[in-house]
Image 1 (cartoon, rainbow, N blue to C red):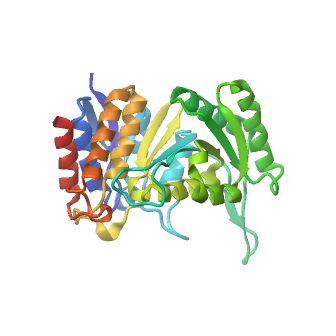
Image 2 (cartoon, rainbow, N blue to C red):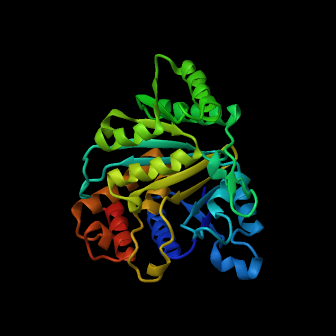
Image 3 (cartoon, rainbow, N blue to C red):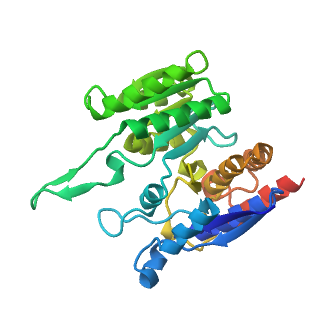
Length: 335
């Protein structure tokens, strides 16, 4: 049976990455029926919004989507499409693995971290307003329900994937009510897994320092929304950068898989962009759909091509284009 998946190509380099990823996933042996839905800057002229309602309807109907990067203007313009998708579809869990890849020169060789980020509230939700002409206020909302939900997701992920430890990351020493509630919620959930999964907590600034000194001491990290966004980029830097960082947004009624990086519009249409992050996001999608063995085979093919170093994009140290890199992975899958 073919899996019907909403495919959102995105802005900038997004369409090239989406096409490369589609070809790799089609070569995996799993059958997909792709329903292409356009979102992003190009939609504003026709629909008045970068996220037309029919795109949301497609995701609701199919319950799964693969999405390319979409531009988010800085300091002005429309609100983030990513934030809107997560809140509208209640995709409360953001999953971002960071695992070392042979062939990429980094400071560490054995990083294997999983970031579990609460996706719907906190400062990152963008609830803000002006307070007079010269001051702005952002509202940080932390609830017990959302905090316990994301903590349970982290522990269940750890159990299902044979991980050893969950670390809750917070700033409860200063924000004693909001981050204090997040930490308390994580501790309550951790009690249900005592004896199976180790639990600890770290203050977020100390966590950042420790991750760049001794990342091997950590495993699954669970964080509120804003800290999760920042720390997940730090972890991506430990394994080669955003170009190899996949992501998933998961809720009770659907999931959207996407690379962590931006749309890089100045490189659009040049066949230069690295599709690794979006292909690995497709690997997360395969796991979510119940194909762990296929997912492992695709991820191994990606890793083998990068380790070999002959047909990789410029940022990975080669001179291959986006399409040629995808071709090499497809060929590896067929060998």
